Image (cartoon, rainbow, N blue to C red; front, side):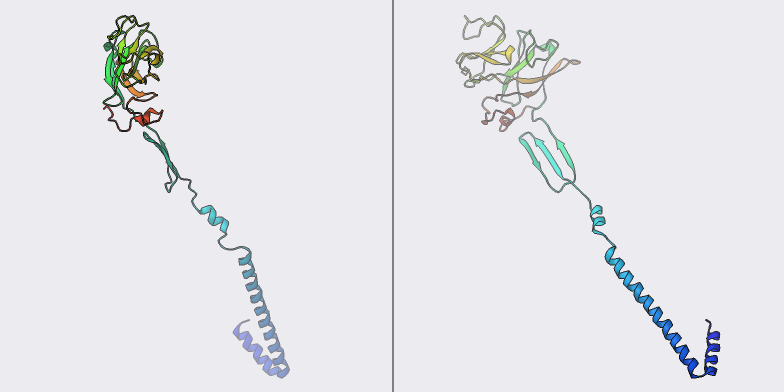
Length: 252
Ligand code: FES
């Protein structure tokens, strides 16, 4: 209804007298009450909707949060350790504490001519020999080149190499049945074709064997590690040779 129409209606009511004006007032109040009731209903509906469906549901917030699992593992020469901490990275590394040392060339060795070298510590003597027959841990074209600690496992003397059929300096009557290490201090004998096993005398255990690698393209022979039992004189009480490297000076 336009203002002009309302004015016309008012004039008509004035002309019509008091009863017509009363009817207009009642119509006006009715419209106002209806509009107010609609507003109240709309407001109540809005409140109910917010209670049923909150604007930021907890499930959505949890899904958006970052999920991280943190594990850092490091393994070194003096023993492994592991930590679980704040890092988001997951890494795993390992390395050998043994140096890689070129000790001879294929042309340097024969069944009668050993090569002597210190490994893995500067003060730890070893002997490399060509046996003439394949042996455990042997390298080279015939898998017959092996190396061992030259320190006797009895009381630490340095034993000598005796080729098959040969005799040690301290006993000319002895004839070696195969390539051996012979300790003249107390007569311990090691079979170099059988992983340094004790075959005579008071030695309580085999001599540690050096792990070798052979480069067929160059003929070079490398020392890359050493097996148990221990490096004599560096026994920490563990059967793990790696522990026995502590306190010594590595070759380089
Ligand atoms: S130290 Fe070698 S046999 Fe005793």
